[in-house]
View 1: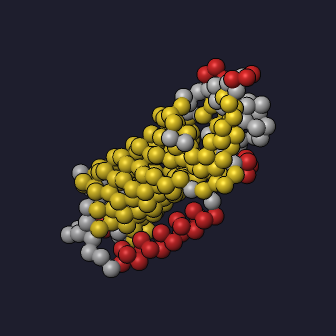
View 2: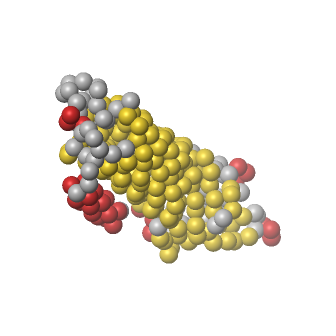
View 3: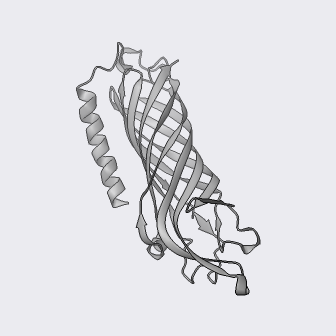
Length: 237
Protein backbone atom coordinates (compact mmCIF):
# COMPACT_ATOMS: atom_id res chain seq x y z
CA UNK A 1 0.00 0.00 0.00
CA UNK A 2 2.94 2.33 0.63
CA UNK A 3 3.94 1.99 -3.03
CA UNK A 4 0.42 2.82 -4.20
CA UNK A 5 0.24 5.86 -1.90
CA UNK A 6 3.52 7.08 -3.35
CA UNK A 7 2.18 6.56 -6.88
CA UNK A 8 -0.90 8.65 -6.07
CA UNK A 9 1.22 11.45 -4.63
CA UNK A 10 3.48 11.47 -7.69
CA UNK A 11 0.43 11.47 -9.97
CA UNK A 12 -1.04 14.49 -8.18
CA UNK A 13 2.23 16.39 -8.59
CA UNK A 14 2.43 15.44 -12.27
CA UNK A 15 -1.18 16.47 -12.94
CA UNK A 16 -0.65 19.85 -11.28
CA UNK A 17 2.47 20.51 -13.38
CA UNK A 18 0.72 19.33 -16.54
CA UNK A 19 -2.29 21.57 -15.92
CA UNK A 20 -0.12 24.68 -15.63
CA UNK A 21 1.21 24.45 -19.18
CA UNK A 22 -1.89 23.51 -21.22
CA UNK A 23 -4.80 25.55 -22.55
CA UNK A 24 -7.97 24.40 -20.81
CA UNK A 25 -10.66 25.68 -23.12
CA UNK A 26 -12.58 28.85 -23.90
CA UNK A 27 -14.13 29.24 -20.46
CA UNK A 28 -12.86 28.36 -17.02
CA UNK A 29 -14.87 27.36 -13.97
CA UNK A 30 -14.22 30.82 -12.43
CA UNK A 31 -15.84 32.55 -15.44
CA UNK A 32 -19.29 31.53 -14.15
CA UNK A 33 -21.30 33.34 -11.54
CA UNK A 34 -20.43 32.27 -8.00
CA UNK A 35 -23.18 30.68 -5.91
CA UNK A 36 -24.98 29.06 -8.86
CA UNK A 37 -24.94 25.62 -10.43
CA UNK A 38 -24.24 27.14 -13.86
CA UNK A 39 -20.73 25.73 -13.84
CA UNK A 40 -18.32 23.76 -15.97
CA UNK A 41 -18.45 21.28 -13.08
CA UNK A 42 -21.94 20.18 -14.09
CA UNK A 43 -22.35 17.54 -16.79
CA UNK A 44 -21.69 13.90 -17.61
CA UNK A 45 -19.13 11.82 -19.48
CA UNK A 46 -17.31 8.57 -20.11
CA UNK A 47 -14.00 7.40 -18.71
CA UNK A 48 -11.65 4.43 -18.64
CA UNK A 49 -8.11 3.42 -17.86
CA UNK A 50 -5.58 1.16 -16.19
CA UNK A 51 -5.89 -0.81 -12.93
CA UNK A 52 -2.95 -1.86 -10.76
CA UNK A 53 -4.58 -3.95 -8.05
CA UNK A 54 -3.51 -6.05 -5.10
CA UNK A 55 -4.72 -6.92 -1.60
CA UNK A 56 -3.82 -5.83 1.91
CA UNK A 57 -4.51 -7.37 5.31
CA UNK A 58 -3.02 -9.72 7.90
CA UNK A 59 -3.45 -12.85 5.76
CA UNK A 60 -1.69 -11.46 2.69
CA UNK A 61 1.51 -13.11 3.99
CA UNK A 62 -0.14 -16.53 3.55
CA UNK A 63 -0.30 -16.00 -0.23
CA UNK A 64 3.27 -16.66 -1.35
CA UNK A 65 4.98 -15.12 -4.40
CA UNK A 66 2.43 -12.31 -4.55
CA UNK A 67 2.41 -9.52 -7.11
CA UNK A 68 0.13 -6.83 -8.54
CA UNK A 69 -2.64 -7.67 -11.00
CA UNK A 70 -2.80 -5.41 -14.07
CA UNK A 71 -6.05 -4.79 -15.92
CA UNK A 72 -8.58 -2.03 -16.76
CA UNK A 73 -11.76 -0.18 -15.81
CA UNK A 74 -14.36 1.76 -17.81
CA UNK A 75 -17.69 3.45 -17.27
CA UNK A 76 -19.74 6.62 -17.03
CA UNK A 77 -20.07 9.50 -14.60
CA UNK A 78 -22.36 12.41 -13.82
CA UNK A 79 -21.39 15.62 -12.05
CA UNK A 80 -23.36 18.40 -10.40
CA UNK A 81 -21.59 21.64 -9.47
CA UNK A 82 -22.78 23.50 -6.39
CA UNK A 83 -20.53 26.41 -7.33
CA UNK A 84 -17.30 27.01 -9.25
CA UNK A 85 -15.25 25.00 -6.73
CA UNK A 86 -17.38 22.25 -5.24
CA UNK A 87 -19.33 19.46 -6.94
CA UNK A 88 -20.58 15.92 -6.39
CA UNK A 89 -19.81 13.13 -8.85
CA UNK A 90 -21.37 9.64 -8.86
CA UNK A 91 -19.91 7.04 -11.24
CA UNK A 92 -20.76 3.56 -12.48
CA UNK A 93 -17.68 1.58 -13.48
CA UNK A 94 -16.85 -1.93 -14.62
CA UNK A 95 -13.55 -2.69 -12.91
CA UNK A 96 -11.46 -5.81 -13.51
CA UNK A 97 -9.32 -6.30 -10.41
CA UNK A 98 -7.57 -9.16 -8.68
CA UNK A 99 -4.34 -10.31 -7.12
CA UNK A 100 -1.60 -12.89 -7.54
CA UNK A 101 -0.25 -15.18 -4.84
CA UNK A 102 0.01 -18.94 -4.37
CA UNK A 103 -2.34 -20.83 -2.07
CA UNK A 104 -3.25 -24.50 -1.76
CA UNK A 105 -6.69 -25.88 -2.54
CA UNK A 106 -8.00 -29.46 -2.26
CA UNK A 107 -10.94 -30.41 -4.48
CA UNK A 108 -12.99 -33.50 -3.70
CA UNK A 109 -12.76 -35.99 -0.83
CA UNK A 110 -11.16 -39.35 -0.11
CA UNK A 111 -9.31 -41.07 -2.92
CA UNK A 112 -10.83 -38.62 -5.41
CA UNK A 113 -9.27 -35.60 -3.68
CA UNK A 114 -7.01 -33.42 -5.82
CA UNK A 115 -4.63 -30.82 -4.41
CA UNK A 116 -3.83 -27.81 -6.59
CA UNK A 117 -2.12 -24.45 -6.21
CA UNK A 118 -4.03 -21.33 -7.18
CA UNK A 119 -1.92 -18.32 -8.20
CA UNK A 120 -3.95 -15.72 -10.11
CA UNK A 121 -7.40 -14.50 -9.13
CA UNK A 122 -9.42 -12.14 -11.30
CA UNK A 123 -12.33 -10.30 -9.69
CA UNK A 124 -14.82 -8.43 -11.86
CA UNK A 125 -16.69 -5.66 -10.04
CA UNK A 126 -19.36 -3.09 -10.72
CA UNK A 127 -18.17 -0.06 -8.74
CA UNK A 128 -20.37 2.83 -7.62
CA UNK A 129 -18.29 5.65 -6.09
CA UNK A 130 -19.96 8.87 -4.95
CA UNK A 131 -17.28 11.56 -4.84
CA UNK A 132 -17.04 15.06 -3.44
CA UNK A 133 -14.91 17.06 -5.89
CA UNK A 134 -13.04 20.25 -5.00
CA UNK A 135 -11.16 22.41 -7.53
CA UNK A 136 -7.81 23.34 -5.96
CA UNK A 137 -6.89 25.11 -9.22
CA UNK A 138 -9.11 26.12 -12.10
CA UNK A 139 -8.29 22.94 -14.01
CA UNK A 140 -7.06 20.63 -11.23
CA UNK A 141 -9.34 18.97 -8.68
CA UNK A 142 -9.10 16.49 -5.84
CA UNK A 143 -11.88 14.06 -4.99
CA UNK A 144 -12.83 11.64 -2.23
CA UNK A 145 -15.86 9.64 -1.24
CA UNK A 146 -17.37 6.26 -0.41
CA UNK A 147 -17.56 3.41 -2.90
CA UNK A 148 -19.70 0.28 -2.98
CA UNK A 149 -18.91 -2.65 -5.26
CA UNK A 150 -20.73 -5.75 -6.50
CA UNK A 151 -18.64 -8.77 -7.44
CA UNK A 152 -20.02 -10.24 -10.68
CA UNK A 153 -17.43 -12.84 -11.71
CA UNK A 154 -14.44 -14.75 -10.28
CA UNK A 155 -11.70 -16.45 -12.28
CA UNK A 156 -8.90 -18.51 -10.74
CA UNK A 157 -5.91 -19.23 -13.00
CA UNK A 158 -8.09 -18.63 -16.05
CA UNK A 159 -10.93 -20.90 -14.88
CA UNK A 160 -14.25 -19.34 -13.93
CA UNK A 161 -15.69 -20.47 -10.60
CA UNK A 162 -18.78 -19.69 -8.56
CA UNK A 163 -18.65 -16.82 -6.10
CA UNK A 164 -20.22 -18.98 -3.37
CA UNK A 165 -18.65 -22.28 -2.28
CA UNK A 166 -21.67 -24.42 -3.07
CA UNK A 167 -21.31 -27.92 -1.68
CA UNK A 168 -17.88 -27.18 -0.24
CA UNK A 169 -16.23 -27.58 -3.64
CA UNK A 170 -13.53 -24.90 -3.22
CA UNK A 171 -12.97 -24.55 0.50
CA UNK A 172 -13.90 -20.85 0.59
CA UNK A 173 -16.37 -18.36 -0.85
CA UNK A 174 -15.87 -14.84 -2.20
CA UNK A 175 -17.74 -11.91 -0.71
CA UNK A 176 -20.13 -10.53 -3.31
CA UNK A 177 -20.37 -7.04 -1.76
CA UNK A 178 -17.53 -4.64 -0.98
CA UNK A 179 -17.45 -1.10 0.40
CA UNK A 180 -14.59 1.32 0.85
CA UNK A 181 -13.07 4.69 0.10
CA UNK A 182 -11.86 6.34 -3.12
CA UNK A 183 -9.45 9.31 -3.21
CA UNK A 184 -7.69 10.91 -6.16
CA UNK A 185 -6.86 13.90 -8.33
CA UNK A 186 -7.77 15.02 -11.84
CA UNK A 187 -6.68 17.57 -14.45
CA UNK A 188 -8.80 18.95 -17.31
CA UNK A 189 -7.81 19.98 -20.80
CA UNK A 190 -10.94 21.33 -22.50
CA UNK A 191 -13.49 18.48 -22.45
CA UNK A 192 -10.80 15.89 -21.67
CA UNK A 193 -9.86 14.63 -18.21
CA UNK A 194 -6.75 12.86 -16.95
CA UNK A 195 -6.70 11.48 -13.44
CA UNK A 196 -5.35 9.08 -10.85
CA UNK A 197 -7.19 7.42 -7.96
CA UNK A 198 -6.66 4.97 -5.14
CA UNK A 199 -9.48 2.69 -3.94
CA UNK A 200 -9.28 0.81 -0.63
CA UNK A 201 -11.84 -1.89 0.13
CA UNK A 202 -12.90 -2.41 3.73
CA UNK A 203 -14.68 -5.76 3.43
CA UNK A 204 -12.91 -9.13 3.37
CA UNK A 205 -12.66 -10.63 -0.12
CA UNK A 206 -12.72 -14.26 1.02
CA UNK A 207 -15.10 -15.77 3.58
CA UNK A 208 -16.32 -19.16 4.90
CA UNK A 209 -12.87 -20.70 4.68
CA UNK A 210 -12.46 -24.43 5.39
CA UNK A 211 -8.90 -24.74 6.75
CA UNK A 212 -8.78 -28.47 6.02
CA UNK A 213 -9.31 -27.72 2.36
CA UNK A 214 -6.99 -24.74 2.04
CA UNK A 215 -3.78 -26.00 3.61
CA UNK A 216 -4.55 -24.95 7.23
CA UNK A 217 -3.63 -21.29 6.54
CA UNK A 218 -6.00 -18.39 7.09
CA UNK A 219 -6.76 -16.62 3.80
CA UNK A 220 -9.84 -14.57 4.62
CA UNK A 221 -8.32 -11.40 6.11
CA UNK A 222 -7.48 -9.71 2.82
CA UNK A 223 -9.09 -6.63 1.26
CA UNK A 224 -9.03 -4.90 -2.12
CA UNK A 225 -6.35 -2.33 -2.95
CA UNK A 226 -6.55 -0.71 -6.37
CA UNK A 227 -4.65 2.15 -8.03
CA UNK A 228 -6.21 3.64 -11.20
CA UNK A 229 -4.99 5.95 -13.94
CA UNK A 230 -7.68 7.11 -16.36
CA UNK A 231 -8.72 9.43 -19.16
CA UNK A 232 -12.21 10.70 -19.89
CA UNK A 233 -14.36 12.94 -22.05
CA UNK A 234 -16.90 15.23 -20.41
CA UNK A 235 -19.98 16.99 -21.75
CA UNK A 236 -21.16 20.06 -19.84
CA UNK A 237 -24.85 20.56 -19.19
